[in-house]
Length: 512
Image 1 (tube, rainbow, N blue to C red):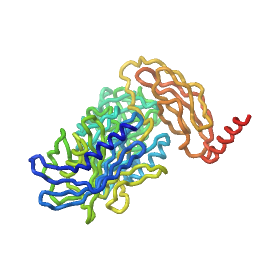
Image 2: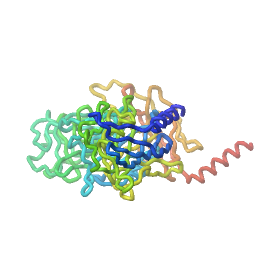
Image 3: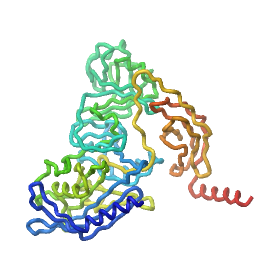
Image 4: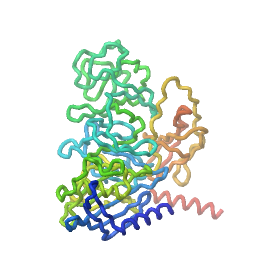
């Protein structure tokens, strides 16, 4: 808490002084004099709202409202990328809709805030314009533009991804990579088993030879941008024979003895191969680099005219590696918005050594969780409502998925033990004993799996109903994943009923 208050006091001192903003040629561009500052400390994030007067060298004035959001640097607070894309396609959803969809799928995680993401095909499919990575998977790999990367160790960078063809991943039910290699032949005839090949629907050349032990994959998602293939995901169907025609909901992999690695519980991924992206948890695309090496970016230097003013969203990285987001308002008579160069100087003022422009205009949205659990947009939405967008960045608290372990060569890891003493206590917490050497556990609740680093897992946010629960030790570079424990059945009750029951039990104990 002391660290947070100190940071706020420093910001307050800085802003009250006002800011002289000059361009790289030394000419004074504008002065930002604060009219009003409001500090909003949310759980896990710190928000600052500033209303400023921007005075320019020709003595003209423009009012501007700036929203600043910085996630706390705590071990259980993370940035992730999210979307709500359709299988076999794309789609658009509001930022608030993405948050509620994410929370429904991940009841063990708490969303603290959200910021809009990449530019996208607003009048068509909704596909993002740049590279998009979500949960370590390359959903869209082309074209290459400036992006904001979130790595597994919670470090960040702004760069341009470099492609190196396509690759196949075979991932087991424990989220371990059993096989990962570059594809040799993509929708092209494979003549020998040493060549790794993939065939998609629409391939109508020479039939795939059964001598090469092809594997048919039942796809749950295949994505294209126009006619450009982006990614495919599915589960192997080892009993299905290859036919002359590949159906729309399947694809075929062949070669490199890949059939020896695959079981029907494995997830098969075909995606663009990005160099050095194995540990990238998420990637969001942008356009201009506003700040590079602590200076205004070359792409926006000198673009400080009164034209092209709009609401804008930007992400910045400081020298110490911390990250922050800024949304400026606009498109009203009182507050017209900012230019790209002004955005760059605003990001510099907040300490950015690197900063990227994300989608803006009516897409600009910054929301935070309130005390009552609902989400509120901090900025005035220029459309008058929240616009449907392609993807976003969320600030979340809890155990997110670790980077998949990739064991290469002979697997000499020890066998982890099955966690013991699985039970649910009166507070709706799943509990079990720790396993020596383990860092994560996989809890199966109903038909879904959740990763946790702790030996206690809350069911408070789960919908009422009957659940079958089991747990296993998750593999790491030291040990192999264990078998599942014996399962238990538990009924999650309505919260009011649960609270009354808990009170009655405690009352009974205290009066005996």
